[in-house]
Amino acid sequence: MAEAAAGFLEQLKSCIVWSWTYLWTVWFFIVLFLVYILRVPLRINDNLSTVSMFLNTLTPKFYVALTGTSSLISGLILIFEWWYFRKYGTSFIEQVSVSHLRPLLGGVDNNSSNNSNSSNGDSDSNRQSVSECKVWRNPLNLFRGAEYNRYTWVTGREPLTYYDMNLSAQDHQTFFTCDSDHLRPADAIMQKAWRERNPQARISAAHEALEINECATAYILLAEEEATTIAEAEKLFKQALKAGDGCYRRSQQLQHHGPQYEAQHRRDTNVLVYIKRRLAMCARRLGRTREAVKMMRDLMKEFPLLSMFNIHENLLEALLELQAYADVQAVLAKYDDISLPKSAAICYTAALLKARAVSDKFSPEAASRRGLSTAEMNAVEAIHRAVEFNPHVPKYLLEMKSLILPPEHILKRGDSEAIAYAFFHLAHWKRVEGALNLLHCTWEGTFRMIPYPLEKGHLFYPYPICTETADRELLPSFHEVSVYPKKELPFFILFTAGLCSFTAMLALLTHQFPELMGVFAKAFLSTLFAPLNFIMEKVESILPSSLWHQLTRI
Image (cartoon, rainbow, N blue to C red):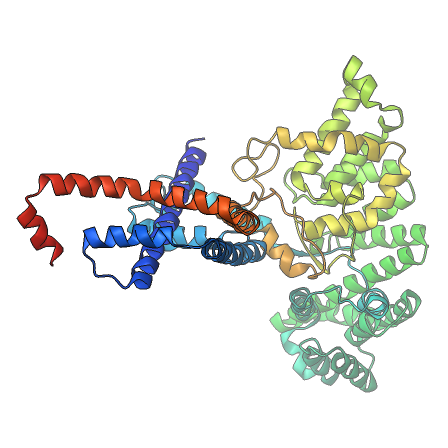
């Protein structure tokens, strides 16, 4: 609370400083304008009388031009501030004041003042923030040729960003290449193909590698990018499995002969696991869900240590499609552990299973009268837990926001993960009677349990502040990124909007009622100059006339 109060006081101080700076700047330019127009020497007595005469001769057109120009300038500042806020999430004026003006005005940076007292806590929170903001491979990512490219052909929009595809290229180089690839011609070609940016160049390189021998990674590339249907992709993956299985068995026998053979065996293992997982996903897409479940179970049993592919999330989705809720619960019991990293799929699937037990008979009116039962309380707590982990998901499940194709990479607890989860699991929530109704009635209650999202968490670590920036790079530009916590408009946007509206209203009133507004303007300016006239009269009465005459001649 003390840190929040200090931050509020610093922001209030910045707002006051900038308000006074703005007002005094406007006043300074008005004085310069009057001096330039009147062309008078800076002798105070003559200047005041001339200014009064000049103000009395001003026409309403002058006031229309003055207020209209002020409204235009304020509007331009407002447009720039709004654009800067939408793009960077902060006010330009506030950022300049914090970075450049606050040190000049004697302000102290909170980070530097608290650095010596909380270095250990900050290092722990920074490590947690880095781990929370790590970008992960989407375990349910679509096929680039059979699904993403078809979307582009139909809509003319690119569903994947350059940043997302670049991360995929890095993954492919990590999983499918090793240092000894240059010793084998086909693998050497594929090593270059994974670095190519042009899709046609990658596909041509894969065909060139297949002309040399049966290359598993070449079949993978063609299945991912050239195949236009899931059936074609499955056919190519089966050919890749035949080639990859042979390479895996050979390297398995030689893995202990040296570091080079060990690296090659690790690469062949990654290739084989990837192929089998994608074959299971092909079976799931083609409606052979039981076959897909069996393949995933066998794969997890054969390679239990390769958790980087998150195959259990594929298995959860397939089991939900079969409505095998007991098997889903068994998978959750193994992976929903405090020592393992969480995901939206795990948290929301656990919430769905608990909601399924009570959702068909749940009524908000009845619950408000008699209170929540133990089972209903467990379901609500599970929903609150899931919403705290990823607060973006409910809007997609409740269809308050439109879905897009999920990216190839996701950010845990971010909008990209919410899209990837809802894209595949919305149908499962709809299938459970009353589950979406229970979610609709209870999900917003989560935010009342968290004192301040960026300051303190309830069941998880505080929500990371880096999700918006990473999601904007992962998601296409035509998608409106969901932001949590919702950012309030900066003070300077509201101040500039009010100033623009006020001056525009003055210009309109002056144009419609010139005589009346002229009287008001003259009265206002006379009142504005009254303190200055009073001060000058007092000065003239105190100072001797000879001294005052000498000062006015300077």
